[in-house]
Every structure is written in structure tokens, then in C-alpha cells.
Image (cartoon, rainbow, N blue to C red; front, side, top):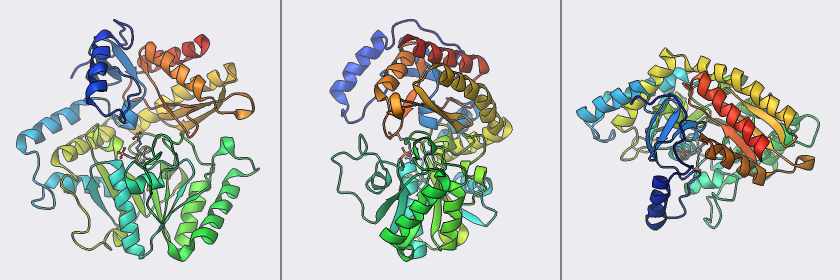
Length: 439
Ligand code: PLZ
């Protein structure tokens, strides 16, 4: 699909056709499924979303870090079309196919860890996390799982239990899964002590030791950069300290790279920034250019612990999603999207830094690669979710799709497709700047 890489505003945002569709949505769709920006999309390509009123919006969200290779990326489109033509489904657990195996080979080769690995494929990020926990429990024979403050791991019962934030994810949805424990996160901007990494690590060790017991702990689950929690980049050294401690205590270290993975942070995986080799890694989102796919990749001896038939699902590693993943990965390699993410950072970070100079409300600028955010605050770092929502809406009205995040809802996050052109990127940053000036 060839979409001109240009912002075009033909109507107010949302336009009349979108308003009409939103009325149908209100009547037909369960309201629990919300929409950030009720603009209905008809086509998309690269860094542009075309709506039903003919508006062309700049995409700073990538459908929550999914279309890293661009929307309707050419290689993904042709691989999917070919696969749909060949066959759409057999169920890998019944009669298998090569594409599933090839995706696992790629995952085993590309993820950090110089040991033998195996992978298993699922439909979503949450399902990947669920299965990582199942595998960790099976291997260790223990039940407890430790997650962190501000963590996000999904919306199924187990992953909702691992997720930290109540609204909107957990409110009235309990009881939650047992044997889930929570430790403090090394969140530099909000850490009250002197040495964030060392103190948060000490608190983590204390939590596991006093509240759980090392001998009861199957796994520690950590996002190397937290996603929904507000793009919290752990204090330097923290991820490494936790991973090393897990190894010393025979506890599995599981990296949830569902949002950070596949070139997003300027490396294939964010764990590499601290040279950490997780025992298990969960991936999804960016892996397949927009088709639903999730995976667990890990140490062969850990993955091999599960009995034959213990993992699976009707659709996990569906052939169309696998074909898309192979094409997306090929695109990342051929077009150097690791380099592209670093390039985007080199343009965006200084601009966000300049915003922080200009506006006191910008309390923190953080992130890596094309996973960047600003945290908006009032006096004494008081979170300002109202201003955050206002700025985001002002961007939306000008045809820039921005997302918010954070435990306090006061983080504006930026996740452009890695193939976005410099001109669109700069135009988007200009719109953001103007939104600050206007509100
Ligand atoms: N782990 C680190 O970021 C998904 C959620 C959006 P699924 N994040 C976007 C929402 O409001 O539902 C995510 C993540 C991390 C797990 C998940 C879950 O992935 O594919 O949404 O299940």
C-alpha cells in the first residue's frame, strides 16, 4: 500500500465519518474496550495513518510499539499474501509447517544469550508471559514469581496479577492469581534515596528473602525498560544486579521484552545494554509487523523441562503470523532498523530536552532509541495527568497520534515506526512543541 508520507488535515479531528462510526461503536462494542483517539483508519503506510475522512495523521504510536517496520510494510504484505494463498491454518500441534520452525530459529539466534536456546510461539504478549511463568514453574518446581512496581505484563488473570497498576487494568477484576509478589523498581526520577540502583536492588533482595523465600521463587520478571508503567529506564546497573543475583540464587531471570524488543530501543533487545543474558525472554508486538504473535525464548535446558504437549494452543504460531514475522525480521536486518532507532533518538532526544528547558512541566526526559517519553509534573514533581491529557489531545487535533502512559498517567510516550522519515518526525515534534505553547 503506497501512502504518501505527508500529514493532511481535511476536516476537524475526528472528522464526520469517524464521528458516525464512533456512534456505531458506542451502540455495538462493549464500552470496556476504550479508544484513545476515535479516528477510524482506512489505510496506513510507513509513518502515516489515513482516516475515513481523508485525513493523514503522523503516527507516533505504532499501534503501541507494534509496527516498527512501518504499517503495511512491503515485505510483510507480500509474505502474508503469499502465505494466505498457500494455506491459512493447520494447527502446529497437529500438522506442523516450516515457518514456525524458522521463526524459532531466528528468535534463538537474535536474542541475547550465548547458550543453546529453544522457542515456543503464542498469540499475544500476555500469552507469552503466562507461558514463561508456566515454563519457569515446571523447570524449578517452585511457584512464586516476583514482579516490580509499575510493571505491565498483560490483562489475563495471571498477567493482570503481575501488572502493578489498578486503573484501568485490575479494578473489580479480582481475585488475582496467587504466588505473585512485588518488589520496588529502580525508578531514578522518583527514587528518594541517594543511590537508586543499589538501594532498589537491596530492597528487592530483602523482599524476596523476607516475604517469599529464595527456595520458593521460580522466577523474577522484569521489563528492561518499563512500557505502560511510563518508560521507566531502570537506574544503570539495576537490571544487571537483579539478573546476577537471580543466577547466584538459582532463580530464573525472565526479561519481558514485549515492548522493548526488535530494534525499538536501538538494539535488538534492551537487555543487551547491560550485557544481561536472561534465562527466558518474552517477545510479541514488533516481532510480526502487526500480525498477532508472541514468543518465549530461553535456555534449552529450561525450555526442555516441560513435558511434551504441555505448551500450545490452537492458533499459537499461526502460519500467516509466522510469515509476517520472518518478513519483519528480514526488514529489520536488511534495512538496519537498529541504526534507524538510534537515528530517531538522535533527532528526538535533543528536541525533548529543549522542551524540558522551556517548560517546567517537563520533569524528566527518558528512554532509549525510538522508545522515548517525557514525564509531566507540577510543583515538587507532583504528577500532572490533566496537563498530559491536554497536550496529547492538542497533538491529536493537529493530526499527530501520541500516547500516554505511567502509573500516574502523566507520561507522554513516543513510539514512531522505525521507518518514519526525518521530515515527518520533525513535523511531529513541532506539533508537540506548539501544543505546549498553546495549553
Ligand atoms: N508485556 C511489556 O508492553 C502490552 C498493552 C496495551 P499483549 N502493552 C500494551 C493495553 O492497554 O492492553 C505488553 C507489554 C509488556 C506484556 C504486554 C501484553 O501484551 O499482546 O497486549 O497481550
